[in-house]
Image 1 (cartoon, rainbow, N blue to C red):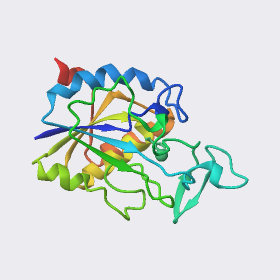
Image 2: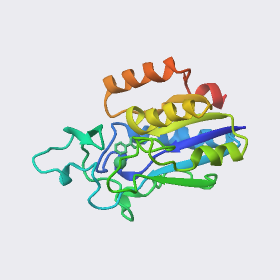
Image 3: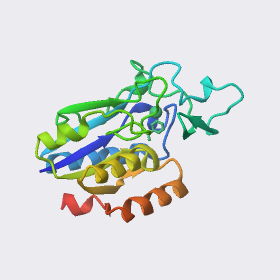
Length: 203
Ligand code: VGL
Ligand code: ZN
């Protein structure tokens, strides 16, 4: 079985949002067109409480996009984004949601950041996404969403580690940083992940 994972397609990651990914809106028609080609469609949702430790606002003397250490891991400090219950945390109104059968929220622990849909950055806690997909006999996962170099990339690495055949639909993602994306891409390919274009699935 094949699953399409919609990663963090939320207002805050789209131009106009708090942590806008350049051209983030361009993926929406592609993501919507892809959905009917899959057995299972699930979504992840970045869902932070106020005062989340990934926010630069919580670290005196630090600016947005500075880095710090958090629980022994390097942490980029972000603008406040995807606050629980706010419009920025909602899925884009242009995202087709009827086929989405489950939503996995992440980043809910104020002390721990969570890019991947499967685990937090330190692999301390699971979202149960892997078990959910395995319970549906999913063997292949296809990734779309925002941002290519953070949440989509981390989800791809965890999917590979969980033993899923992993496809990164490159034109259905956009990155915050092009160089960061190239680095992540090399890492994912080295672990067996494949990068494809949506046209391969849509024709
Ligand atoms: C993301 C930074 C912080 C993402 C989430 O969805 O890629 N990036 N939180
Ligand atoms: Zn976040």
